[in-house]
Image (cartoon, rainbow, N blue to C red; front, side):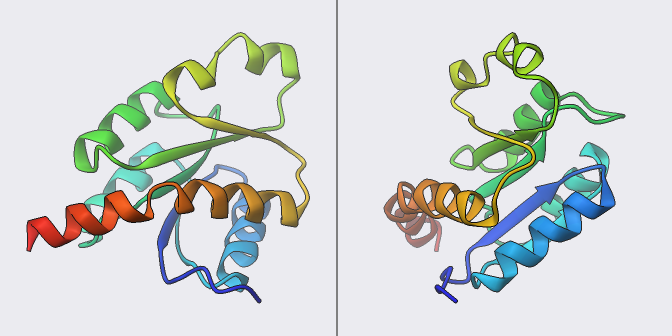
Length: 139
C-alpha cells in the first residue's frame, strides 16, 4: 500500500459495482473515500463534510444532475477541487463533451486499478501546496 496521505476523495457513480470497486481501490491506497450514487447525494455529502474535498471522481453521465451542474456546485463549495471524469461510453460520445476544456481529467472505463491510482496521485500532488496554503490561511 502506498499512503494516500489521508486526503478525501468523493466518488460519484450511479453503478454500485463500479462505485464500490473504486472506493476499495482508493481506500487501499490510504485515501478517505466518500461515496454517492448521484449528484444530489454528492452535494449532500460534500456539504456535510467539514474539510475541503480536493478531488471528485465522477461518472460523466448520471441521472438527476448533469456533470456541468455538479462541477459548478462543487466548485462553489471548494473552488480548488479537481474533477476526474470516468466513463464507459464510446470515445466519440465523450470526446464531443470536451472535458479537458473545463479543466477536468478523464479516465475511460473499464480502467486498471493502477491507472486510477496513478491519475489520482498525480492530480492530488499538483494541488497539495495550494490546499495546504488555503487551509492554513482559513485558520
